[in-house]
Structures are given as structure tokens and as C-alpha cells.
Length: 458
RNA sequence: GUGGUCGUAGCUCAGUUGGUUAGAGCGAUAGAUUGUGGAUCUAUAGGUCGUGGGUUCAAGCCCCAUCUUCCACCCCA
Image (cartoon, rainbow, N blue to C red; front, side, top):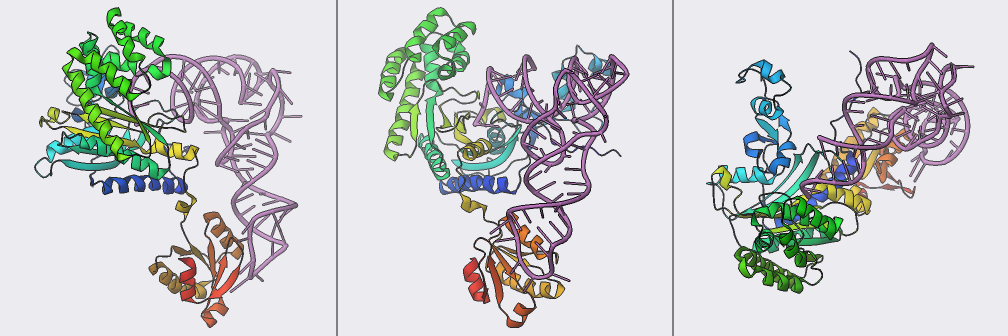
């Protein structure tokens, strides 16, 4: 058989030891914060039924789902003849639903909603859960965008209280403070966006308006207006929107302008009230990072209904590294209506990229093996295994070189793995019962007892 | 999904208007040095030039397709 060049699918990556140590540092930090705030872990399968996933992320989202081809003879049982399948005019989607009924999860929120409905009888509400698992999107890879990446989700479901929003903001602030990333936390509320759409006389165009407004800081007001017109919003409505688009600066002035605009919009007033409450709490909390009320923040996922939040690194050019919001009725579609939830998701891979770019990983996390026993042969080997066991039971990460190779080679091994101490046990040491320990940084070498060794190495 | 971009040794990259046997540095292995590493010196190994077609007397170089990389758009973590 011809040798084939090994490769992995587009947009996926291998993680080598150094990367894993650093990734685990991120996961451990985030997990600890989640636990301190009283959240409990769950996991769900990497694949879900396509019926669970389809239609939850909008039209775009359905296209980005990885579908899993059915097992067995998946062409059997097709409702129509094979010639129809081979007909180039036949729509691919039609075929897809007959030959694939499973897909890889696109995020952790929808599987969580499914989980809550299925396990509603055993859960204690409000249910606070966290979940750290990979998700898959059939996107084109680019900077900060992978086809396989990890999300770290925290959600609380079964509580309408805005205290949850406040706590989630605290979690964001705590996580990024611990990781050493300076961030800007942007907040908005979907009800405010709905209120704006209503107030300018285009309530049915909410999505179009938010998608266009979202680009304000990126493309500028002229482009946004162009897009609004292009999306079928009337000239009059666009004119009414201008005072909102040009709003800048103080939170108070935004509130004043919106209050005036929302004279006839109840939903707008509701959103504004929610935002005021959240911001007041946050002011009391004295966070380490800045937060802002940003009217242009929209967020794509269609299921958000209340507060929305997005986090960006201040010192690196990267898309949002954390985002989320409140969804009033995510479980309704699975048969459990009236269950409000709010949650956020940390993008571990983007956080990694930011920390890498800014050199934020502490050196101390790279520590692996503390000491290496040099192997001088079978006699010495046996003797070393006992000493090794003693070090290991004292929680000192240690190892023995498995072959009686040249000392140079064994030293090289220690250097390359960054092992700071080498222990040499030869005939002399076995006779005298001491350990010759060499410091690989200073080159210093001395004889120690086991007790001294433990003290030195721990 | 749209547009662009990259691919030569394990890694980083040279490679002339298409012209004999595709090079360098780093790394690897062995030795100088049989229980003492990082330095130095010497030698050795390592390539279907991403893949498949095509043009040509001749292709790493030109053309087409395809895969991959990176980037922008769309959208998003």
C-alpha cells in the first residue's frame, strides 16, 4: 500500500504538550471561577439529532452545521428514485435530510436547552450549570476562527432575576482579571433594540436594523445608512434613527435620548429599565474591567430576548472572546415553555490566541518533571526504582531514563524537557546510600540524603 | 457561500528568462568524550518540490483542476 501523507481536516489542530499545559491553565482558571460562583458541571454528546440543532441558529447557522452521514445502507428507503438524487437539479438539502439525521453540535446552549427539558424532573431550579466542551462549525477558517473549538459556557435557567446578569458580568470580570487580559465588557438589551425598531416605525425589521447597526463602529454611519435602505427600511425610519446612531459618550445621555424615543414603546421602556438595574448593580460592584452600555451591540444568535453582552480584549485585535445573553424561551421549542435563562460563553481558543500574542502565560505553569534519574544499568536501575517511588509518593514529579544510554544523551533529554534536577545513582551511591543531585541550571552537584532530596525537590 | 493568498528536508527558507545530479541554516543521528549536559569541530542520514492532469525536446518554475495554509467579506467564540 502506498504511504499516504498524514493530515488533519481543515480548521482542526493538534495540541502539543506546551500548548496543552497552557490550554489547561485557561480551562482550570475558568472552571474554578465557575465553581466558586456555584455552578455545576454537565457534559452532553458531541453529536445531537439534527432535528435538535436545525433552525436554532438562523438560516446561516443551518449551513454551518456538520452533518453526519447515516450508518449502513443510507441510500435505502429514500422516498424517491435514485435518478432523482442524481438529478443535478435536485436540491442538496432535500437529500441531506434523508441520509443524515445526526450532526455535530454548533454550540453548547441549544444542547443545554435540550438537556434541561429531558432532565427537568431531576433538576433543581434555578439550575446553574457550566459546560466546557468542543463545538464544530463548517466555517472557513481564518484569524481566530476554527472549525473545531472549545466553548466554556455558564448558564442559569429558571430565574428571571437580573441578579443573574450581574453575576455573569462578575464572572467575566473575575476570569479575565485572573488571566491578566484587559477587556471591555459591552452590554445592551434586545428589548431596547426592539423598542428602537418600534419607535422608528419598522418593528418587523428588527433583525435587519440590528445587523446593520452592529457594523457602526466598523464601517461608519454612512455605510450603515446605506445598508438600512438596502435592507428595505424606509427613508423616514432611517432619518428617525439618526439621533440614536450618533449617540456617544456618557451612559446618562444615552438613557435620556432613549427615554424620549420610547414614549410610545413599552418594550423599549422595559429594556431600558432592565439595563438601568443591571448597570446600577454593576456600579456597586467595582469591577476591575470597564463596562459600557453600547446601543450598537446586536449579536447574531436569534434566540436572545433580553440582556446581551460581548467582551473584547483591549490590547489585541481579535473578535469577541466571550459573549452571551438572556433567552426567554429557548426550551419552549422542546416542550417546556416559560423557562427563562441567561448565559455566557468563553471562547477558549481565542483567549489562548490573545494570551499568546500578549505573552500572558506565566512561566510557572510549564513545570513538569522535577527530577530525572540517570540510568547506569540494570543493577542501578532496580535501586533507583525504590528511590523514585519515594519521591513520587511525596508528590515530586520524577522519572527515570528507561535505557542505560550514554550519560550525554540522558542529560540532553533532561535539558530538552526542562527538567531542573538530575539524580545520579551509581555503584558509589548505592554503597554509601546517598543521592548525587545535579542542578541543571547552575551545574552545581552535591550528595544528599533522601530527606534533603525531598526538601530540595519539592 | 464570495474574493484573494500560500505550499520545496522534521522546522525556517533559498532556488536566475523553463535547462545537467534541487541547496543553506537550525534540528536529528554518530563520533571527537566508556559516570556528567548546554559550547565547538567532524561525518552521516533526511526530498513522490502539496496532489492529479496538461503544455514542452526539457517543468520546483508555465497552464488547468483539486486539497491545504493564511487573510478579507458574510457570520461568529
